[in-house]
Length: 114
Image 1 (cartoon, rainbow, N blue to C red):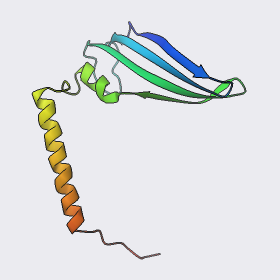
Image 2: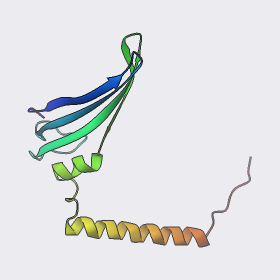
Image 3: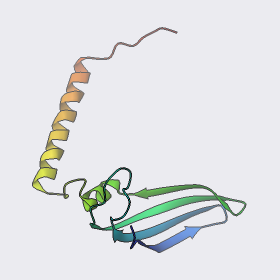
Image 4: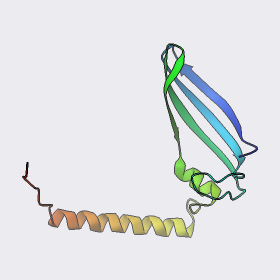
């Protein structure tokens, strides 16, 4: 994303842990992202990084953001609430209900092998 802009919204922490809320905007352009060809669509996301610091160095960092929303914004997923999105959600829920019913009547055989 050649025009990527990240803005820190809030940050809290101490000398060992920190949480940073951020916003990111840009255009999905340039190199592919995880195998996806750029669509040149504008994106705007927000997320949070949780950071663990040890002797002044980042030991671990976990980033959380809505990946489905990113998929919608770049065109990988259908828009939330669209006819296709509603149909896909219904189909998924029917499949889940049928799978649950089948499993309730067909318990798995457990192996007692060592």
